[in-house]
Length: 262
Image 1: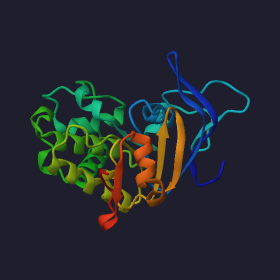
Image 2 (image 1 turned 120 degrees about the vertical axis):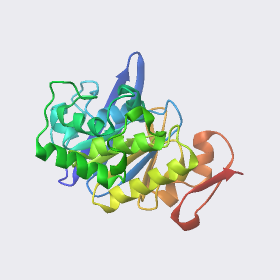
Image 3 (image 1 turned 45 degrees about the vertical axis):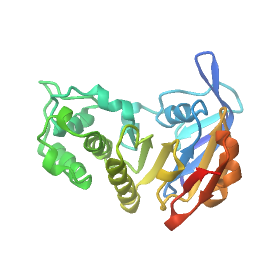
Image 4 (image 1 turned 180 degrees about the vertical axis):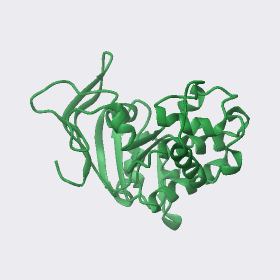
């Protein structure tokens, strides 16, 4: 494994039930190179995400390799300090009356929400407050989680993933269920993460939410990589039209990918 890789997969087959979700799959992701992973429903994005977070393993085969941070075996506890993961469905894991600060603090115990017996040190609280401040929601930390807007709750989820200060952040469909203003705010938060030194893995359906700081794009279809490279080469009109099976036209205003019907 190359020293700068945090994920290396080679010749992997990954099953989800009776479905072969990733087929003869090979990929390297490197520190310092943020990447967007794009594809339609059923392309294999969620399975790749579960490989990246250690939740699933590939089929055993002498040709297959799957390493995270140079290790063939890992603990989920260790990965929490190395990869921060934000998924839209995580919002539903918290009671609406949970204090927003406790949403972040409970990550330090590997839990979704604070229980009565949880105790946190001054160091723990300082780490949570720093993460909350980085996401610009310090004034909301004492509010009940359920009273916050979708965009505000998403920011607390990012702060929760950020509390361990992991080098890699994974955002899965971050704009799901967000209105226009909240989506703009979330994009700003993603750009701040990259400029702050984190490697960002963005999993998305939407080329338009890929920030200019991300230069590498991977296209998935039917459990395979169909394109991987510089975004202006990968996100061309013909490739996206073929991927989504609809005529599309791509332009690049200010480094953003604008996709319209052809």
